[in-house]
Image 1 (cartoon, rainbow, N blue to C red):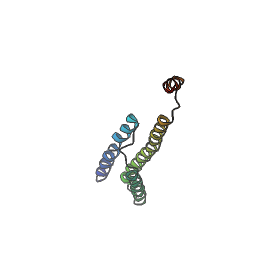
Image 2 (cartoon, one colour):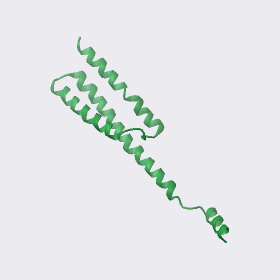
Image 3 (cartoon, rainbow, N blue to C red):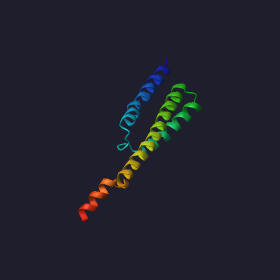
Image 4 (spheres, rainbow, N blue to C red):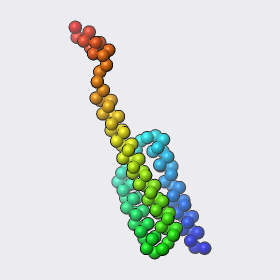
Length: 110
């Protein structure tokens, strides 16, 4: 009977991460995400998962394992979308001029 509180709390804990994952996916932006907080959450969830396994507490083990997987996914999203943003910025700065721009610039200087 007491395990129901562990399962209930764990399920709520699992769902609290989902909106962040969805927001990152929809906006393709991780600008407001701190990679340090993600790393801390991964370490904490890893330790809780190991602890749950050692003490044979199924709710603690399974729910923190799921949250751990979610934070690993968020870290992958961070790495992927952070790279895209950097590449997009570089492309904008490094775009070669079009033929029309070159002709217009040459006409202005003549």
